[in-house]
Length: 270
Length: 270
Image 1 (cartoon, each protein chain N blue to C red):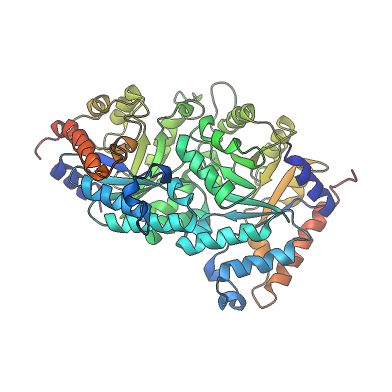
Image 2 (cartoon, each protein chain N blue to C red; image 1 turned 90 degrees about the vertical axis):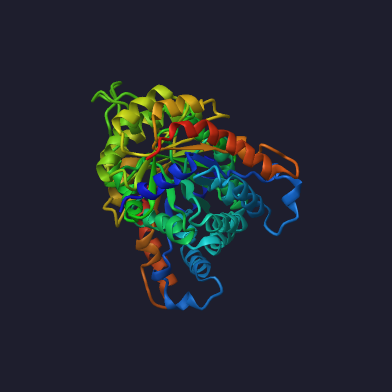
């Protein structure tokens, strides 16, 4: 099974590689949803309804749900169920542990939460990814080169063998799994590196954060990734907080549409 | 404030550096607790009561709680509250993210769960640790050199500057925080490296997993760490599953006492 096939079909149909990041901070919720039984889920539901025509994926960073305890965890679960098969649901969890522990995390996100994809952090090595890769119909998305300044601290260190840590990490992980179920996180803030990595790993999808608030340019990213981009480009705040009033969902829809319109030229008829 | 002072007092009083890992797998619970309203919490409560005279810390790996959804999250919270100030509570979460996200994780574990310590994964760099270090009365415990075979994949790669990735990582992190609130995870399975790291970072506490099931030797670890060891040595399955019958807690207490007795000779009167 090649998980890329339904993903590419959905991208062709919408001519979009947009992922909406549902990184919901309680203090930023519009008054409109505060009266709901579960305000975070209500906010997500309305954002999803408004952006779904333009977006092929939703990314939920677990931090923003965990910080509300078991109620937050429920909002996360409900949101993933609501997305269902209408788009790719990504649990941005950046987990990384070994053996039985990694197995329990894989079970958490793939069976309990029922997400389509989960992000993992590779510091502990290849054995920390294997229990995720056991779920061949799900996506495992490993950190490669991240978008933050701290990426220089470890990921960009030079190894004696003539590569950087992130390149070696991606090579190692690509030896564990093909591109049909493994993706890499590569930040939008270093387009030159992105271009090189695209050449090195042409068959792998990249999940690309860092456009907008963090300074990455959407056009530079799209140019680096080429036609029919194997890219899932994430935007969070610029979409979900595009409006603060009672029309917040409509405004989010407009913001998503704007990004989709910048993307559609990169899709060729298949 | 130096978080080492109360920790060292507790260690001196119990002549112990034992941490009990509450990595509870539902299938392994004794029949005795299955009738309780919250079987995982009931199991933890009885293990804590039985092992507290010999143990200075409890480590809860979040994977084993998250995989039960919001109910698991509640068991985690209740267990940390039950430990209260009677021992150090460590949320073994290995989180690693940036900016607002890292802030939300720090809030999750330090304010919402109220743990004394949280483990973090350093792949994303120094900026991913700062929001945790903002809580100066709490411990941030960063992965250094882990106990699994996969540690060789990334952590042990040689850098052009003549160090391994894990050494450079620990140097970098030690430049961000002193030993009064930052610890390192260093596995028990590589005692020669442990000894070198102890010499290099003599004032930092190490959280040491990998004794027992993973093959690390308690005596080798204690010898490497020297008198009045600045070490928190974790054991999970060998203690919590020491007995499977109705006397499971008593058996766990015995197993903890056995380890404490191997440790006590390393404590000198202060």
